[in-house]
Length: 207
Image (cartoon, one colour):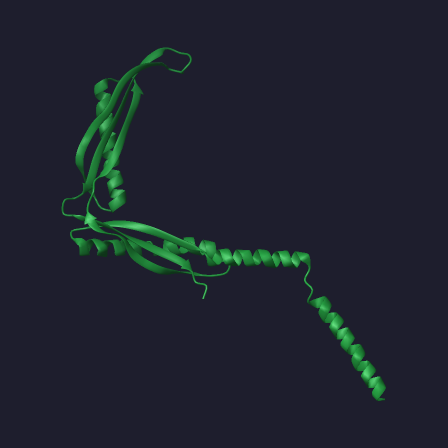
């Protein structure tokens, strides 16, 4: 009786070990899928997004406060960009909101104007280039500082020439063209004296 019991136990043990061996041996395709999954997980864990905002203020303290307010409005955008990279495995969080450019005196922002047309004259060429330079300077200044700006240096023509060219390059009548380039500068209103920047950073939370 004991012999039969022992034999049965040995038989069951062999079957069990054989079954386990078959179950724990992954296929090559499974290994590749697992490796790819691990690569994506590592990449997702490195997800990071940041944005730097610039602000102006009447004094240094006001500048930093305004920059932090602007930065706080950007947190959702920064988080969304980070989450797009990490979403499959992790969620992102804001890890820092720090001053990257401490308050300093405001600098003007330049704008360029370019005019190149036929059927005009030199006066139109010059005035058109200057107007475009001043518009661009105001636009660039407002985009950078986030406030209304004024012209700090009137537009000035830096290059002007007249030349003759065929209307269709290799054929057609020749026509006189005028080409002018101009520069201008703009700055925030005079009550603003300082500029500074704050950076918002989001990273994947891998804890």
